[in-house]
Length: 366
Image (cartoon, rainbow, N blue to C red; front, side):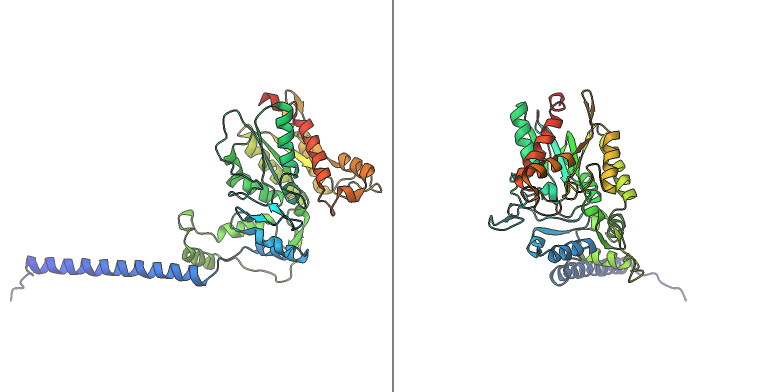
């Protein structure tokens, strides 16, 4: 018996029906994904990094819990300043202008595109650069800007990218992800305090590698659902529950990061200046004047080996320890220091004068 083939009309109807079913399935799946995405955003809070939570715990341990409101979790830098933040002038040690729209301690927007004829200096650092205990315009980056403008008559923009709690590694990652977009003519580093902090058995580099492994591809990172699924499947092994703590940056890692920053800037012909911050112990008359911590020694060696200019000859390091000792001799420690390392407005101004004097011969060539 001969088998008759379906009529062309019937075959066309079947294809149309199959197409309709596929389309319906696709639309249904899309709607389900949209609903799942909205549910994730509504009911599942964004996962904060371990480092961010540790910083919040650190602030609370220092009786600075209110300061945790001025930072937010960041998948690249662990945390950043909350944009456009202002705190009451009556508060302390963080008050007044905290950040502009780009999370810099500035009272105005700074465009990424540098205006013609302007010289830009990008200051990277921790709470000492940010200006713990002082107003934003009393912190030394702002004072340097005023002094350089007054002495040179040139248009100078000093950008304060200091963030409380930052290590050199975080400064490096900021430079890569955002700092270079400001087209700086000079980068100034001021780190070495938080780097020695022991928060857990992993360093900042380890935590950063874990965070990046848990992040979906860039095209999917805006989706909370993708973040959750990717993070679940790429969650690292917790390992030993009671490992021995270690510094956030080992001295070898600190030195390696300095080299990486220098290489990054050298490729763009941007000089690097390192500040050796005067900790209170450095200014103690009972401590030998030449005494430095291990990280301070790393910075000294690096800065001496990498001048910011050969014509005129200008070193890549400003050792502020002698200045700190001088200020303590003349005014006493209470007039210079709030605590073990944060300095008063008077000291910020003296530090700004030292930086301005150092950069005086460099600026005319910019």
